[in-house]
Length: 132
Image 1 (cartoon, rainbow, N blue to C red):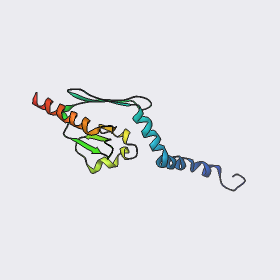
Image 2 (cartoon, rainbow, N blue to C red; image 1 turned 30 degrees about the horizontal axis):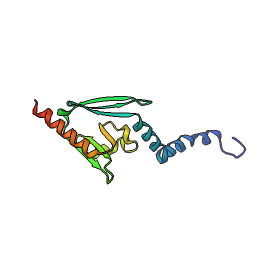
Image 3 (cartoon, rainbow, N blue to C red; image 1 turned 45 degrees about the vertical axis):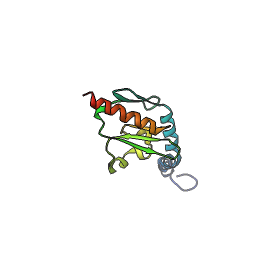
Image 4 (cartoon, helix red, strand yellow; image 1 turned 45 degrees about the horizontal axis):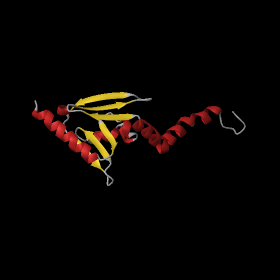
């Protein structure tokens, strides 16, 4: 025991809880911004490509004709997010709620002129389906 009468173990026991609390309050926004800054998106006539570099690298290339749906979320400034697949309540049980850029579902986050990108995706997807 130390001078205050609290065992050292008990003082150290609280540190992980404080760190988790700090992450939930502010750290998740910092992590999300850092991940988004290192994420690149590309659209070809056949695929949507998402490449993330840095500390948490990831690469995905999804064929347009395999996308079940394309969902658009647009704000009043024309910026938004495009998600792929059917939205479900299960989606909100993942870490993507706390740090959207780390979601396992393919998505295009924080896109400027998102409506134009959405229209390009829909056109490219329809062209792929027609060429089958």
